[in-house]
Length: 225
Image 1 (cartoon, rainbow, N blue to C red):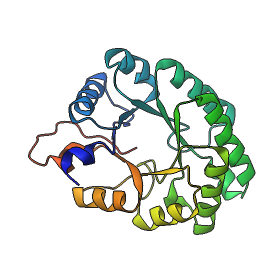
Image 2 (cartoon, rainbow, N blue to C red; image 1 turned 90 degrees about the vertical axis):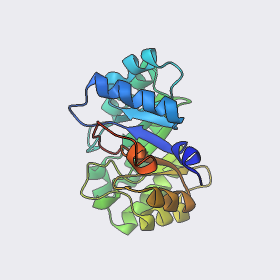
Image 3 (spheres, rainbow, N blue to C red; image 1 turned 180 degrees about the vertical axis):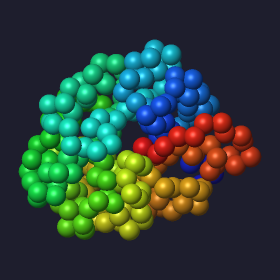
Image 4 (cartoon, one colour; image 1 turned 45 degrees about the vertical axis):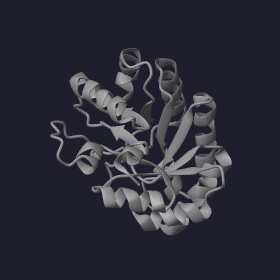
């Protein structure tokens, strides 16, 4: 797969708490230049970015990065993101509910956020570094039954990020309508290619430029999402 094709899998990401508008502008310009799948940015910038780059696919995060905000808060975030111009939403599951084995509650929350998001793409972040295999499998079922569009490995803020083992597990247990996004710790073109070969439709990374165009200078350090 050539570099141009690899860029089309990238959710170009900047989610640090101190991310400036100048950094967001640069991110958006890069995404436009290299025709990336989307930019993934903090919710506070969605409206401004949509107005400045109306043709760009904008993704934002909700319940991020810990996931334990209440369902109503996540619904409100999703509605606001949609109103501000987001085309895609990445939500973190409530890991407290997961640890309590309240999978029906998790499923209902995902379904409620999907309803609030409407036709917009919903990606559900599991944060796999904190989960047992049994929990991951149960969440694959919950994500599928709730009608989400993607299942996603990680926030990039946890103790570890994506692994090929987790992607293979997801692929084996999600429904046919659910796609996979890998994020967190993907550091090279070769790693990107491996994740795509295993079935990932998106790669969340702040390092796309340095990975795919290593001779291009990069002034902004970002965090995966």
